[in-house]
Structures are given as C-alpha cells and as structure tokens.
Length: 199
Image 1 (cartoon, one colour):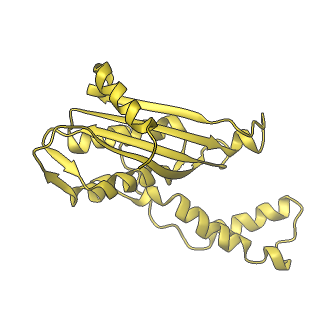
Image 2: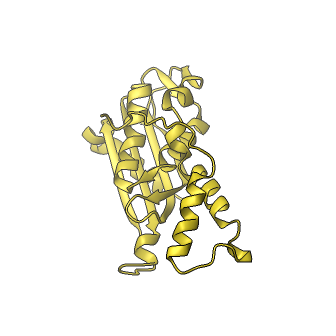
Image 3: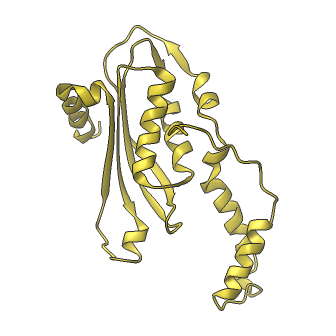
C-alpha cells in the first residue's frame, strides 16, 4: 500500500464509541452518571470523530478542483501551517507547525489546499514521521512537481505529560523529494525561507 493510499471508512454507528467510553469510565473507578460526566461519552465521540475525520477524506477530491496550469517554475512555500494530530501509540495529541514547498513543472495548486492536505493527514491516528512523508508523497503524486519539501516541528504530549515528562522537547521531521533531495542549493533555500521571520 502506498503512503497516500486511502482508507475510506464508512460512517460508524452513532453512539457506539460513546457506549465504550462509558464502560472505560466505570473501569477507571468513575461514575459516568454524575453531573460532570453525564454527557462526556457523547462529547468524546464527537471530538474523536472530528479528530480522525481525515480517514473519510480523499486527496484526489481535495486537490483536483484547485490545480491550475501556470507557467511558473520557482519555489512555492507555504509555511507555519498549524497542525493537530493524535499519536497512534497513546492517543495523546501532538501539535505544531508544518512547512511545505514545491517547485512546479506544469501545475500549481490553490494555497489553501496545501493546508487542507496537511489537515487531512493530521486528522488520523499518526506518527510524525509518517505524516511528514504522506504530505510530501501526496503532493509529488498529484502535482508531479520538480521536487517537494516538507518539514514538521511538533510537541508530543506523550513525552510532556507522561513517560520522560520533558516539558520543552520538540521533534522535527523532514521529507525531501526530487530537487529538494538532489540539489543542496534548493534544499538550503527552503530551509532559509522557513527559518526567516514572518512578514
């Protein structure tokens, strides 16, 4: 299965996740009928459906309506895209920012679609390394640019709240394809652009 292969899940039966959460609360020693927890299973299910809504999105449909033939062959950079995801190991959040760049050959894509693509893959159970690769591979496959670069900088609550409890730790991952991998000057330009102050 390729990195961008879609996992399209059917809409699950409403309330089932909430029923399981209610059982979990009981196993934790809580009373799910007390005032503060009475609607927590329902709220948790709604939140989890939203946070994993990327499983029910298709990158082809997301990008196809916003690709344009343009005579432009310089680097396009969309930086500081906020992202929020769930670590698949502990179901705890990780969050940060994503920088995406590509060098068009024939096509460009609407800038908001780059952010939507990041959201689509982030709204799944993830690890940061896979997320970085999926974003880069999707852009490479759909736009066929000369190259793609993706950098993600994130904080993981599974490291902050539990385990080693390192409050200020961040993780940086990158995926470089095409010219970004093969040409040091291109790679250095990307790194310089994403590290420059915001306008």
